[in-house]
Length: 214
Image 1 (cartoon, helix red, strand yellow):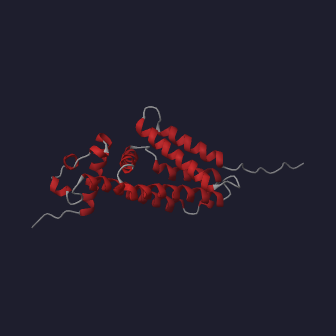
Image 2: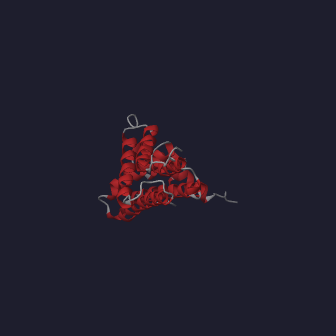
Image 3: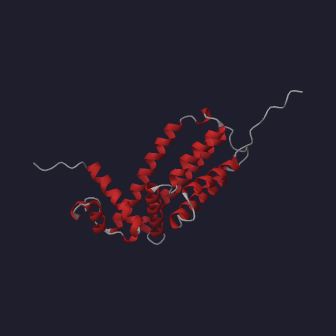
């Protein structure tokens, strides 16, 4: 009787191996053979997922988006109704949510590396354009939604242009991600978090204090 192979488990093995190779060698230089060797699989098994370099790159980016989307959804469910949390905690919760986009640990560093390499390739390869735009639009929707929820709870300064603030915060996240991947010895995970919290703090309305009783 043939040995049963769990396709989901096999896919996780392939994705993990793929990400490790991408971090080490770069996405555009990652080969089917290198991924197969890293996953300790024969190359025929890999061809079940992709038959070319282009399919491999697309698979890597889609896998990154799938993983990130699952974690973001889990965090949103954990947060629940944002307004039930104290104001300072609201800012921390939103920062923790957005920090899923930053390379703060090995897993997220691999994902941001895939993101950067794929989008570099997409600049000159129209076959990758749709997925690249999808990821850019998704990041902006996430940031806009987070800022909107903070506005609805009265946490942010009134009158902010949320479209402009979305672009500012998205650019900050993109810059932190790029710098932290390229220069981890200069920009640490802790500094990334501090920068993000400082930015959100600058958008936060001052807490009203009651007038002292005469």
